Image 1 (cartoon, rainbow, N blue to C red):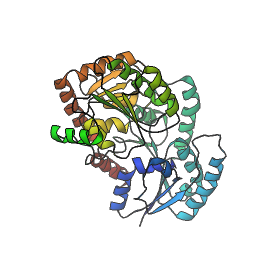
Image 2: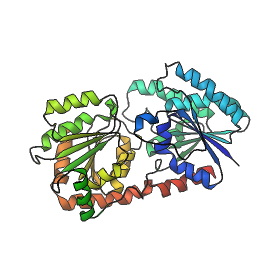
Image 3: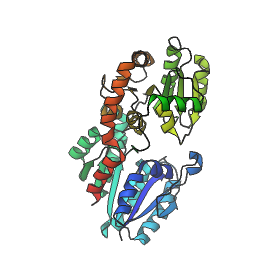
Image 4: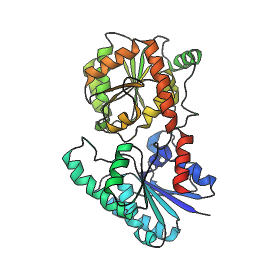
Length: 372
């Protein structure tokens, strides 16, 4: 029986992004072990229920943290004693520490895979990002048997610049049995259950509350939309260090009655089914699952210009792409969709056809071809 070790900085990453991989591995009779920092208590009931063994390793996202030296020592012992056939690492620090800890095992025949969930260097990235992150990824590619990318820009760059076997897959998979459109009667029933009126315009913005996600732009959009739809509401789903700043922005914009902060939410599919529009304001994305989820649910999308959004959204067909941090442009695009039911419906249907390529079943087939 083959043994596979999945690593990442935090366990929630494995929970949220690697269930399809675990299903493929179990299908082929593999044992699946996980090594990552246990942060599940912060994630409102998220559970790691598909691993055969779980190790709590104190990775830190900060390269300067001494916790990563402790993580290296603990992980090296696990790897040296584990006799793994494949070690599959994820996230920047999880990937670096794992590949360092796996050097000896790799020489003894263990294969090391790394999934890049979006390089920090890309067209339009800062010079600092290229000077810092590009040399690191290029160096560690030498200790990687297969480098898996989830957007075409990263795939092309890695193929040209890195000395390793580079593969492309359509993201990490979204459950198409969980995210799907419902009829008008069912939509109104869910709206009523969640406390919304039948005619309210509902926008949803999903993501960890971080500066990169720039949810403040969405708050400013709602301030403008309030003139057209006084009872419109923006649902902000996620938690993180920007919460207080966002709460201040909401007060300054005078939209306390128009913004609902959901925190970390495990029933996002319900909110996607009742939303009229999904918005995403990030500066940087690799391949955003929240956009795939929206498109699978037939929600049109208005999103900021970045490679992850452009990978998924065909401007004018499944939604609109607008400049980063341009609330006015996002407002105009949102108003265009919210004021035109036929356009909204057509965009939603077109988006779902694209999004099915990023569903569990499609991605599992791609992972199976990489592993087996």
